[in-house]
Image 1 (cartoon, rainbow, N blue to C red):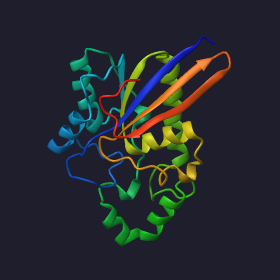
Image 2 (image 1 turned 180 degrees about the vertical axis):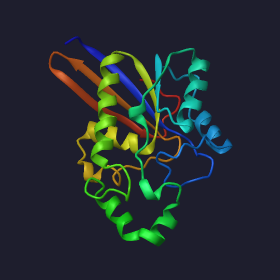
Image 3 (image 1 turned 90 degrees about the vertical axis):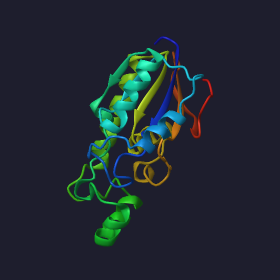
Image 4 (image 1 turned 60 degrees about the vertical axis):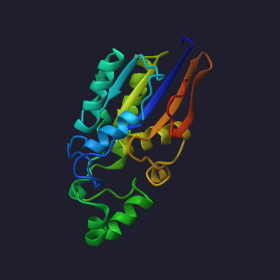
Length: 207
C-alpha cells in the first residue's frame, strides 16, 4: 500500500428554486440566491486537482462552472445523489409535520429503522454513498478534491469518518446551504486513517 494524503472538501449545494423542502430526487436547479451562496463559499486561494459532483442540477451546474474556472477535471457520480424521500418529496417540513408528523419524528430519531413512505431506505442510501467515497479515495489518491453534493450525502460521509452510528447520522450534523467540510485521508502501510478537519464555514483556507 503506497503512502498518500488525500484532502477532500465537501460542499452542499445552495438554495434550489422553490426554497427549502424535502427535495431528495426532485431535480430543481439553483435559485439566484443559491448561485450566490455557492460563489461566496469559494475563494481564489482554494486549490483542487479535480471536482466530483452529484449529477443533480443543483450540484452539477455549479460544479461545471467551477471546473471551467479552475481548469480542472469534473467527474459525476450517480451514487452521490440525495436520498429519495418518497411521498415527502416536494413538501416542506411544516407540510409533512402537519400530515405525517409521527413518522417524520421517527425518521429523524432513527432513520436507519424508519424509512419515509415510498422512500429509499437509509441503509441503501448509506451503502451507495460510502461505496462512492471509497472509490474516489482510491481513484484520485494523493490529490486535493472537491465533492459537490447534498446534505444527506455529507452526513453519510462524516458519519463514516467519525464512526457515528447510522441511526444518529441525520440528526447529529447540521448541513446548511453551501456548508463546507474538510476531510483528510492518510494511507500508509499501517492502514487508512480518516479525520474530519473542519466543518461549517471553510473559506480561503488551505490543506
